[in-house]
Image (cartoon, rainbow, N blue to C red):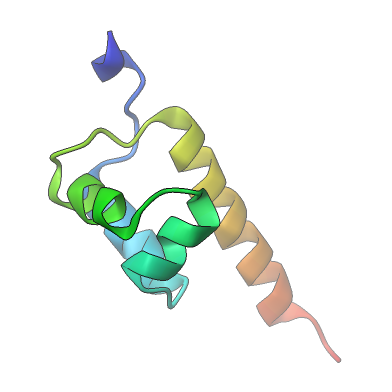
Length: 71
């Protein structure tokens, strides 16, 4: 049943992390998981569950808003 929850692939997670200009350690800290878990998700050893996908998408949205802000 876990397979029904994984929506983002490991490759997509890695692309998102690189777009955020984050290390695996930084993304792990932001997600509340160990950096090794991020690495294993990126390699496809762990599924990227829906809550992780949503958290990463939230970070991407917030980053794009921060980048587009005129200060």
